[in-house]
Amino acid sequence: MSVVAPLEKLQPKNYASDQEVRWCPGCGDYAILKAVERTLADVGARPENTVFVSGIGCAARFPYYLSTYGFHTIHGRAPAIATGIKLANPDLDVWIASGDGDALSIGGNHLLHILRRNVDVQLLLFNNEIYGLTKGQYSPTSRAGTRTPSTPEGSIEAPVSAAVFALGASARFVARAVDTQQKHLPGVLARAYAHKGASLVEILQNCIVYNDGVFAGFTDRAVADDRQIHVEHGKPLRFGADGEMGLRVRAGGLAVEIVRIGEDGVTEADILVHDETNRTLAGLLARMTPPEMPVALGVLYCDPTPSYERQVAALIDTAMAGHPPPDLNDLLRRGHTWTVGSPRREPDAPEQD
Image (cartoon, rainbow, N blue to C red):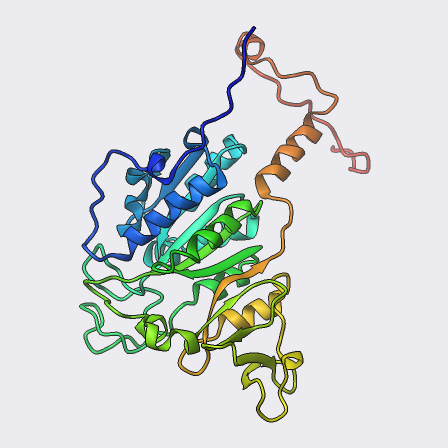
């Protein structure tokens, strides 16, 4: 009699590969790797069923450091490779690790399409607002005025917001987190894993060499309470050291504003409640920037629809219904020519002379 033993519960260390992790000391990628290993253990992901796909850049080293399957692909094309993997085997858990330059510059077109198609992958977008691997050039997310070797007088371009871009591309799951917030980040990653469809998580991370402290204006402990708002579905949008501040809809309903509970007759009933299924609200939260507004962290939007690869599989099943299974061996031996289909004339087409 054979007995099926239960699968062993894996620990975060079980997902680490035998490769030496090599990023610059102090790089935010270390914290993200730690959070991903913890998340994989928390959700019970099986290494033999997990694939990490990356493009080019510092973040793209991720597949080397995880004891799973992995593909280190070419610049910006990780979403295309990941789509092929998911179509070939929808049961695999597919993750993408990509930097802001890799994903939003040369890879912007591929990112757009994997999001709008709603392929069931977890896409981790590491955003440090700079090109790190190629020595500090400005990236699509760099703020206006950023001085780099490629913009010595300061960038004159308006930056791309990854979360706003994703919402505009019809993504069904959009979240944002900070690399060093190890109590918060794994929970966001677990939510992305549970979502059946394309999940984009923008992870704000530090590049200690070329853009150190770029997010310090809202991540430093001295200011974090007043310049961050952690959103949670069904909970009031409150922030501050004691939750004394909140967001409410501005008169006219086209924007949100900061109010202080207890002042000018403001009560908790006036505070907006987060609804992660509301795309308009998600857009307002994604656009908030300090110091005027707090940065929204957490799941900004989650409204599932059927994933792309499952719809493709259903379409194939429908097309094949009523037809005998194809026999490749028989086809190859049918002769020197194959008749794909018999020519036919449309019923209303005129006779030809």
